Amino acid sequence: MPEDQTTAPVRRQRPKDRKQQIAENAGRLFVSNGFHAVRMEDIASASGITVRALYRHYAHKQALLSYVVHAGQARYLAAIRQSSGAGAPLEGLLHGLATAALDSRDLTLLWQREARHLDPEDHDEVRRVLVRIAADVSAAVQDHREDLPSDSVRLRAWAVLGVLAAPGQYRASLRRPDFDTLLAAACRAAVEAPAGARATARQVTPGPLRMLGSRREQLLASAAQAFRGCGFVGVGIDDIGAGPGVAGPALYRYFDSKAEILAALVVRLEEWLALESLRALRSADSDAEVLRALVAGYVRVVLDAPDMAAVAVSEALHLPDETRNRLHRLRQDREVEWTRWLGIHRPGLPATTGRMLAALAVSVVNDMVRAPQSLNVQAKADELVDIALAIMLDTGVASDPEPRQRKAGA
Image (cartoon, rainbow, N blue to C red; front, side, top):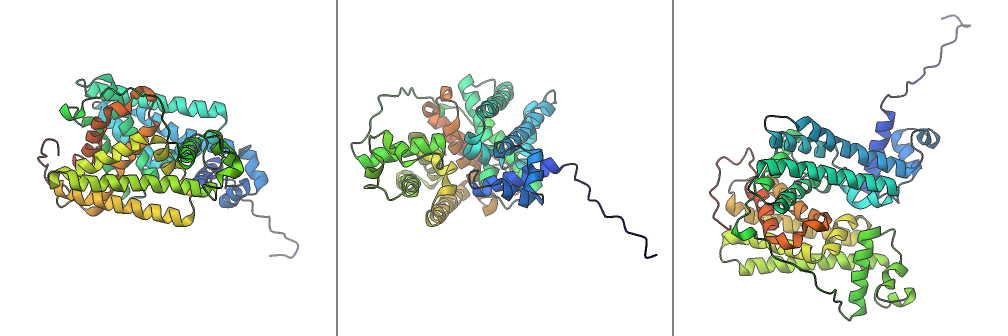
């Protein structure tokens, strides 16, 4: 090459999907670290661009969060549109929704934990779309289960959404095609769950709110409600003390820190659940009845303490490391226990699949604390137990060679 000939600089082409790549990186960071802990600099670094370039795509973090949540919801809406007019609308819908859920598995965590940080208009729009998705699923369930009253139809529609929420909470070691199939089958089992004598609705009329006289208990109740509504980061010590009438400094007579309050709430919930598990083992008349008793106890605690249950799911990221690790072990122990008794009904079911089915059932129950109040889930606790059991017992999998004959009420 002659000395006077210069080499033209290599220009890198900007990827056509740069905006989407940035959003995906931001979503992963929001899920792993929490919205408040993530800086625009972190997102830019993860995307291999400068902060200045990042601001050309998104004006602020809320805009990024909005894009990620709306993109996830758009996948659900697309699945609903594609299933309309199909020969088997429900089957096509459930498979489409399962695929959408796995393609955007972080959506649920972001909605449960971070959606409160959206601008008010965005937040309202996200909620409106969620209600629309639930209504579309309800319509498909109603067409398939004409025997059910409207409230039971809606309960199953929200149960389907609970199944679809599970991949965001549990990282299963299942191959993607198998996971798609399992998720759709679990949704179908929730829809097909019986609504017989054991699932009759009870009339539940809330009475006056009664509180224990203990200041510590009042602070815990106030914190659970505040954390659920505004998130751990968005709540101050004064906010927690305002309800019980405890001034900021006086609160430290009961707790050393806000993190200790959160840990106390989560540990208490786990202790209540452990007590219900022991009660199930002692009260069941036979081994075949233990699984139902375990599920019924779990449902009872979640519906009796919805604020605490919601906080345990959405705010665990902010727990001290020691408490978070303990929580993980306790949940694993419960998952193993449920799987063990599931094996009584489904001998030969692989442990991996059994644990995932148990996780799907738990996800449905946990998600019910976010169902509309008009659904009155508390009055349909028995039916919710039947739905959770159907997910574990009636979800067909490739390794389940023959359909089981399940005893009534088992």
